[in-house]
Image (cartoon, rainbow, N blue to C red; front, side, top):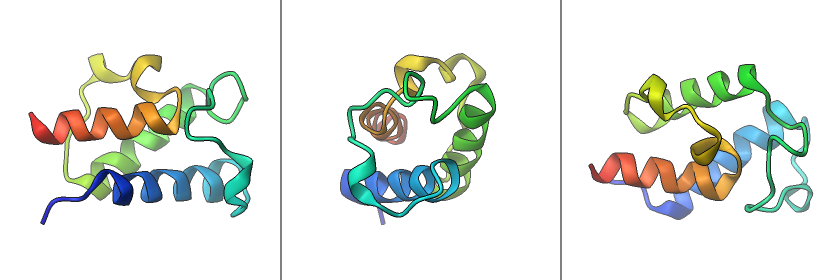
Length: 87
């Protein structure tokens, strides 16, 4: 079974809201908001997200993929996971 982008988005948003922003208020985070600019994640937060992605989506994230272009927003994370799963 493959996960849809909606399922991936829900999993990523849920983790960010509950574990990095300490809220379950869905309105507090726009999918295109910069997680770095908002101070939601830093380098440690990126590593935490990588672990979540690897565990939940059965994939390996290469060191070279750990860049802001892939992890700066929910939209970018979802796109990265979808691209990686399709490859």
